Length: 162
Image 1 (cartoon, helix red, strand yellow):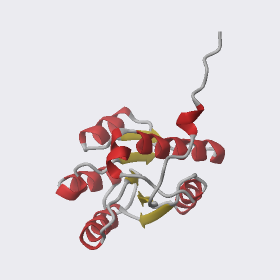
Image 2: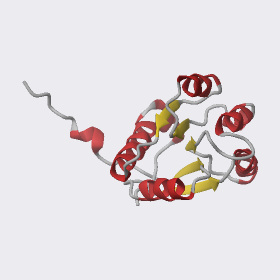
Image 3: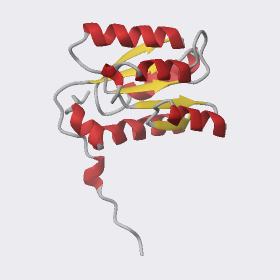
Image 4: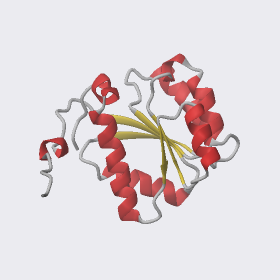
């Protein structure tokens, strides 16, 4: 017997503003692909980018001071210069403004030690970057949909479709 799929779960959510997404990624190719995947999603997004771990911390702090619109989701790579993504995440989690920011570690690593440290550092999810573009797009879209439909997304409000 086949299970019925609830297509209502795939319908765009009622929306009022774009998502604000933070991406900490030092790889040019990976960053471009991540940005393209976010842009192809059914919800408008403003993407803020940092290219190393220290720049990520500094930009997040600047955004929290200057922006009236909170960030909705952050993607952190692990292997970045100056400070790695896990060190940056630990620093960010010490700031009250980012205590509840959903953070996804989005990395090529599949090491158990990295996974454990990511969760101990305050990550909400650990996702290995797919090597194929189509799978990367599907993965990014699933992450965005998940955080829109969970309590975190409900708490953050509605988002504008593109």
